[in-house]
Structure formats: structure tokens, C-alpha cells
Amino acid sequence: MTMNRRNFIKAVGAAGAASGLSLAGHSFAGSKSGGGHVVVIGGGAGGATCAKYIRHLDSNVKVTVVEPKTEFATCFMSNWVIGGLKDQEWITHGYADWSKKHGINVVHDTAVSIDPATKMVKTKGGQSIKYDRCVVSPGVDLRYDTIEGYDAAAAEKVPHAWHAGPQTALLRKQLEAMPDGGTFVIASPPNPFRCPPGPYERASLVANYFKTNKPKSKILVLDAKDKFSKQGLFVAGWEKHYGYGTDNSMIEWRPKASDGTARAVKADSRTVVTEFDEIKADVLNVIPAQKAGHIAEVAGLTDESGWCPVDHLTWESKLHKDIHVIGDAAIQKPLPKSGYAANSEAKVCAAAIVALLNGKSPVAPSWVNTCYSLVAPTYGISVAMVYNYVDGKVAKVKGSGGVTPKDGNFTMEAIYAESWYKNIIDDMFG
Amino acid sequence: MTTRKVLAAMAIAGLAASQPVSAADAGGAIIAAQCNGCHGFEGASKGVVPALNGKPALLLSQAMKDFKSGARKGTIMNRIAKGYTDGEMDNVAQYYSGIK
Ligand SMILES: Cc1cc2nc3c(=O)[nH]c(=O)nc-3n(C[C@H](O)[C@H](O)[C@H](O)COP(=O)(O)OP(=O)(O)OC[C@H]3O[C@@H](n4cnc5c(N)ncnc54)[C@H](O)[C@@H]3O)c2cc1C
Image (tube, rainbow over the protein chains, first blue to last red):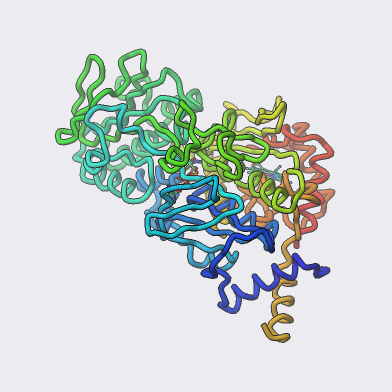
């Protein structure tokens, strides 16, 4: 390997990590000399990937990640925990080794403002961090205003479990405590929302748990939509595993057209109210409508839809220069709000930022999305798509992608789903 | 940093030998980055999905083309491979084969 300046700096970074000499913790002043300084807000699927890839692509660029949590629990695979297939630890990942390994400065704090004029991020803890470019990947906030009686306090009794961590553990605990013969109700949100197949994977894996542990119990999915992601495959899987469509079905799905939209919640009695009905659940899981994470709104990066318009070539905000928005918070359509998509966008954004900081034009991007879901422990399904950049926007590559074929190998898909998790975690946090 | 440390640094980097990539000379790197979500960082899979790093370029590009044509049947690669041109597959194959 020839040792140019870039490799040399990379070498020093690697040695620093290997010898315990950390590059993290240095104060990054944010000057243009030496590649510039990128401040990443949010160390999740989008933010962590972006930070790592920027360092990988050009180790002259300094990267600071602002993230309040010292350990990140992934939403992806949190349904496996809720269904009892894995424990909470399996989906929880720390930042300490990662930050040393890649020379990423991690500030465990919450960003409270971004000033595009002075290029300054301010944190709750009182820090001011200057950037050359800022990446915002705060994920989603829940729109509590859309369901009467539901708020952060109510979520302590009626979990949403749409942010992983304590909410995941709470829902699991409630399901474990539920007596056999009880009803578990999931209120599924309107589009667009984080992880379109997520509520249905959750219903599946809880059904699997009930089947062996509480066989007299039922699951009711109330839906604010009339159709959902991978619906044909989910329904076929439910028929095969949970008697769906028969009198003994463990799962019932009530679409919007059949009064499926949750309008109010009475948290104390675990009751959900629709237009014409009031349903008392033994365990109630309410997933409200969503919008971009609060900081995106505060920083003026959202439009009237509640999401952030961006230029798909660079993921730079259309509203503020030098600020990029990736992941769930961005208007990413036709990419879905998934972890794979956030990871995919993060790499395109990282490459664009490195190019721009070096005074070059961004390279034509390419994206992939895949969402694996488990219907049962050895029965997996997937949806995939390849995307390219057409007429200034993300576009699906015609003929690519699609869902698992009807005669697909569902067992292998379940095996590969777990492999996917190991590898995307390695890609983000390895 | 002492000379000894710098030399140690270079040796370690040599061992770690990640491919130097810049956005400017990206080639297959841009597309390959998109495969890493399933095949692992730099294609060095940590799961049961096959690793791609260091494999002969011809093997990788032929596998992709066979997935695209349907000559080889996979669970998901047929759907993925249909998203790329032959040229793109050759570039990606070249990129992964260069990572040890
Ligand atoms: C139940 C469930 C199952 C899912 N399953 C899958 C799946 O199988 N496959 C898949 O691809 N996707 C899945 N997803 C979707 C996936 O989790 C998200 O799409 C993905 O995490 C989005 O990445 P992000 O970077 O936008 O947000 P996140 O990963 O949520 O990261 C956002 C981070 O920003 C931090 N943050 C927020 N505000 C601030 C602030 N002001 N200052 C500093 N930090 C801040 C947060 O603490 C958080 O760590 C699932 C989601 C759910 C809920």
C-alpha cells in the first residue's frame, strides 16, 4: 500500500485507536484547514453511519456526533425482543469503542439549536459547536396531538415502543404479565411513518409468543390505513401460522374503512376509542402519526408536512445551506423510512460532504433499501429496491426489487434477516 | 509523535489496509457502500451472508450477472442485481476484490 498523506493520517488514527491514544475528545475548532469539521446530530442509523463513513472516506475531516444516549437500542429487531426471541442487550450498542476506533468525537448531549448563519450547534448542556457542515439525523417524533389523551406520560402505561429502549422493555414486560386469554391491541399509524412493515411484524411475533405461551389470547390490529407494506406476504404467513381468516384466528386486522383509526386513548383503563367503538385491551400499544425529530423543526428544516425537504444528490436541506438531513426526518420518498434507507442515505451524504469539503462535485449517487420482517422465527419475508438519481431526485430502478416471491424460501429469508442485522450493525457501529 | 510510533502506526494501517477511497475516485465504491448493509462493512460479512472482500473480481461480477439473468437463484440477490448495469457490476466487483 502506498502511503499518501491521507493514508498516513488514517494510519495515525488507526494507531491512536490501537494504542489507546484516542483522537476523540480533542476540541474541534471547525476551521477549513485540515478538511473541515462536520457536526452530526443524532447517533442512530443515519447519523452513526454518516459519521463513520466520512472518517473512512477522508480522515482529514473532523467529525463530532451529538447524541444524548450513551447506548443506542435499535428499533430494528426490537420486535424480536418484544416477541421474546432476543433480549434487550442484543439490540443495544455503545459508542465508546467506536468513537476511539474511528476518531469520532462523541458529545453526549442534546442539540437544542442550529444557527445556519454562524454555523453553530448549541446543546442543552451549554456547549457551542461550530461546523463547516452539519448533518441532522434525529429520527422521528411522535405526534401526540393526533390521539386525544395520549402523551409522553400516557406512554408509560400504554407504550408506543416506536423508539427502542425503555419503551421496548415496557411493552415486553406487559405482554409477559398479561394473563392467557387476554387481548393485545396495536393501533397502527397513518402514512408516512417509520418502518412501514413494523406494526405487522410486531403482531406476528407477539402471535408467535402467544401461540406457545398464552394460546387463548388474541391480537387486534387497529389500522389508520386500508392497506399495508408486504400485506400479501404477511397475510399468507398469518394464514399458515396463526389461523388468519378462520374463526380461530389469533390475529384480527381492522382497517381504516372498518373504523380502524384510533382517535383517543384512556391510558388508565387501557382503552382505545375509534369513531364508533371503544375497546378495552389487556395490553395496549399505540403508535401515533409521526413527524421529523424536534430539532429539525426548531432549526427551521421542516416544511408544512412536518418533514425536511432535501436535495437528493447531497441530502442538503432545501431550506438552509450547509445543513444536511438524512434518515426518517428527511423527505426521502420513494425511499421508505427504514434503517436500511437511513444507512444508505448516510453514505451518499458522507461522500457528498467529503467531495464538497474538498472543493469537488458530488458523485452520482446510488441507493438500496431492504426491509426484512419475521412472520415467525423461521419464516422471514422481505422487500427490496435499488434506486438511482434521475431528474434531480431519488428514483426506483425499473425492474429491480420487489417482495419475496410466493414460492420463496422463507426459512432462508429468516436466517438472512438475522445476518442482515449483524452486518448493518457492523456497518454502523463496527 | 515519535518516529517509532509513526512507524508502528504505518504498520498497523498496513495490516488494517482498508481501501483508500475518496469521493473523487469512487468508482465501484459508491455502489459497494450500498451492499455493505447486507454484506458487512467493506464486504467483510459478520453473518451467514457471504463475504465479498478479496474475492476474485470475475467471480463476483459473474455471480451478479447470473443473479440478474436468473441463471443463479438466490433469496434476494436476483431482486438486487436487476438494479445494476453490467458495467456497474464490474466496477463493484473490482472494488470488493481489491479489499483484503
Ligand atoms: C419496531 C420497529 C422495527 C423496525 N424494523 C426495521 C427493520 O427491520 N429494518 C429497517 O431497515 N428499519 C427498521 N425500522 C426503522 C428504523 O429504526 C429507522 O428507520 C431508523 O432508525 C432511522 O434512522 P434515523 O437515523 O433517522 O433515526 P434513529 O435511528 O432513530 O436515530 C436518531 C438519533 O438521534 C438522536 N437525537 C434526536 N434528537 C436529537 C437532538 N436534538 N440532539 C442529539 N441527538 C438527537 C436520538 O437520540 C437517536 O439516537 C424499525 C423501526 C421500528 C420502530
